[in-house]
Image (cartoon, rainbow, N blue to C red; front, side, top):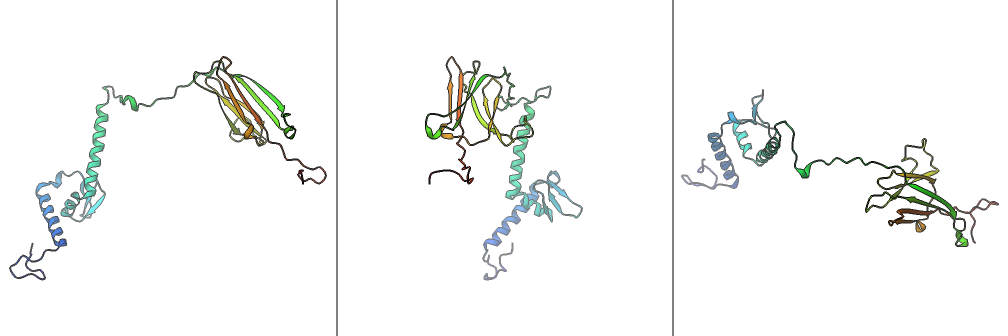
Length: 243
């Protein structure tokens, strides 16, 4: 490069080289080295379009000439693309090496898909439903109570029955759905899930009790209380209560 015709330099001297000029010189030197060592005819990612410019198929970039493309190949984006492509080809080679002669892929034992086994149901459990009202205290004498007792003599070891509440719009058996009711579901393998249709009213969570007798009886008990409905005065239609 011409270093003697710069501002601030003497005739015949090297002159002052700025950082930008040094960087430009470095890039030109890399281009010349690349042109000498790289055969563009064997580059699988270089194509020439109908406009006479060059494209990089790996990075999807457009370049005006070969020198500009060579400068691109030394950049970070192109090098990362080459590393990513090499990694994908390595994975493909490993998959091809794992193929049997018959063409069946043998996945590692830890990565094989475990298909869920379909369990055999043995029918519904025996159950009883008891309806009552709470008479222990005068204030809650009108509170309704439901008790469910189910027997699971063939339940799987180390398992306990599960329960949950389902709205009328979740189920697909009773159609059309009736918003006045909800469903209490109780499940335990290998028995079928049992659903009880109960009124869709608020339940007293403080008095909701479940008990599992895992001994010889194998009996599951669930007791729930409905909240007391608000008292209405027949004369004026207002809610009753102490003043």
